[in-house]
Amino acid sequence: MTEKIKYIGCDDPELELFESQYELPEGMCYNSYVILDEKVAVMDSVDKRKTDEWLDKLEKALDGRKPDYLIVQHYEPDHSGSVGAFRARYPEAILVGSAKALQFGAQFDEKFDTTHTKAVKEGEVLSLGQTSLHFFMAPMVHWPEVMMTCCPEEKVFFSADAFGKFGVKDADPDDWTCEGRRYYFNICGKYGAPVSTALKKAAKFEFDTICPLHGPILTGERMTEALRLYNIWSKYDVETQGVLVAHASIHGNTAKVAEKLAEILQAKGAGKVAVTDLCRDDMAEAIEDAFRMNRLVVCASSYDADVFPPMHLFLWKLQMKAYQNRTVAIVENGSWAPSAGKAMKALLEPLKNVKIVEPMVTIKSSMKEADIPQLEALADALLAE
Image (cartoon, rainbow, N blue to C red; front, side):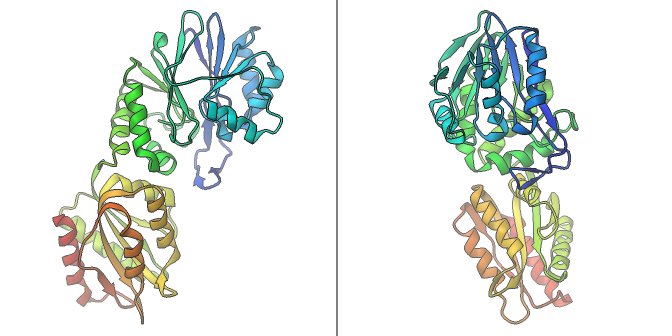
């Protein structure tokens, strides 16, 4: 990376689920860095799955030296899982983190040694010699103990989980956006205001490199684009003018309605129109697309006097991730007592600045020619907003 900063992170290509819920077609990586100055600082550890590999890389980078500090910016186990092994090997090194991070250390490990620890505060600076580490707190990005670090002399910003992405470190190096977006809205999406605050703090420093805890190191145009997108995402602004049509269909009839509506929207100039099958497609990607675009259509079958569960899960997750500032249309299907529309509306109404457009369309069992004018009217109403 630089003469003083070395990368010692580890890929985990065999990991199938991140946080036991997000699909990882290309695995994951845990980034860690070591700064070699008059004092030696290690920036974060890695998941316990990769402890031995990480310690071997660290020892090679140290080349006979001993670390003076282990900086823990985020105590989630995928980054703190090797702290205990590090401290066993280098017992004189000082563990540096926020006060809350040190508290979490004791919560995760009942044998946590409180000696050789240093709790740092907002704006505190740790000198390593020719370089220095400037700490600022970033609570709820996306845990309360998180802090971020700038090294002005090297123009490097250590951003904790912010600016991360799914995948091994160098997977698809030219396409950060897609998996970076899926990562952001599913990991940090609920915490737009804290992310925005952290970005303002980081802007006080001059840097040309962002070192996240997951994904590639960001420089040049890719870093500029990532900063632009984080500014949009953290404010819940619209990245792409378009419509996501999300459907949950039991026997395929509601899916046909969704596809027809998508065709109508495309013909009417709706911009980008995407269709997702909530029963089969990646739910995290559906969440990502809902935040990406300014309009959403939810189409679902009625089920047990409620709504088909995949749609309930989707809307519940949108609630959890603070979905807001969007326009939504509803299509329900029912054979004898349609209930999906009422259930979906109840899940949407509490959302901030989400407008539900009329008319709500009701399909009885399967789409008929007589239903097309209703879909046309719904498309017109959605695009008029």
